[in-house]
Length: 451
Image 1: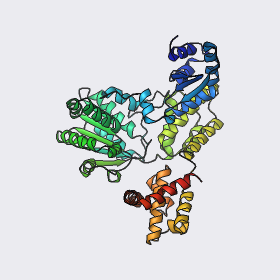
Image 2: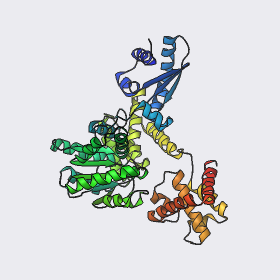
Image 3: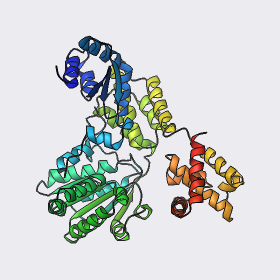
């Protein structure tokens, strides 16, 4: 036996576990290396790491120690533990990926969920009605909305809709060339095409599309040359009547460092936002997800989850997957107690990423620095010192919490989201020009994080 992979494969064969547990938790593991007496294992998702740590590492330790003849410790790592470069070493992005690889990545849900991103599995509600209707029309090749620009916070179903458009057109018009690509893949493909002297192949690949679907276009803000290429591709496709759909986490006017010409193209057609789903929609998502996983869950548990988890769809899906995992491992049907523990974990995780920071702490710290009251920062007063302090507080809250622009606005005297965006952008601009100002902002962030 000349590799750790072979040793780990041998160990897997000796595990006395159910087929479901093996497929759900053991097969996704990649054995990375044996570092001295430490077996380093990798799984993509953090919840899979947690399941393995809680239920299987002691079994791995025993079997590997028996095979190797010395005591072995287990180190399970996931994407959250690794840098971008380390993740790419484990899961490299293919050069100039073909459509199938990209679509498989986008349409694949969390591990073990067997979830297909189609219109049938998308739950329509008031929060996404316009975006859903526009995508349905695009999937029927009506070209009524071209380009179509869908925006909303992460985890609300934008990628699901893109994949649904792609799947529907592929089914009804298999002759059409559909290009579905995340923005970072587009940028990666473009950079590789230059590096490998394959720019002609790159242009032919994208300009030959009958339908172009680009996910997370806000990421183009960091890639000026790729912006120009997307601009040229869009112009050619649009002038030839080809459907183009973009998604983003914000409207075009709020994306910084995007060329104005490209930003104007985003705004040519229909802008459709997706908001946080209302209770009825969240409940329907939970019930559909549980059904697709063959998970028996009573209505009381579903309502409890829908009431407690409000931020995004991924929260709901993560909760169902975790409950299903616990049910498989323990052999116990889902209970309210089980659901409550899962919800507390999710909410606690959010509070602790990056740390249990609060708006109150930020406002208190900034008020102390500028010698003003916390009430002044939240007030409508517009004197220079209060306005400066308020803008820095808004920027710091945006920087170190997961609050949306709307939520931040509510914390600062019910200001609208455009005021919050203006404050954040102004601080960003001054930081570049004024070292003393930048030091104040950075000190504020450090002080709050260390409280």
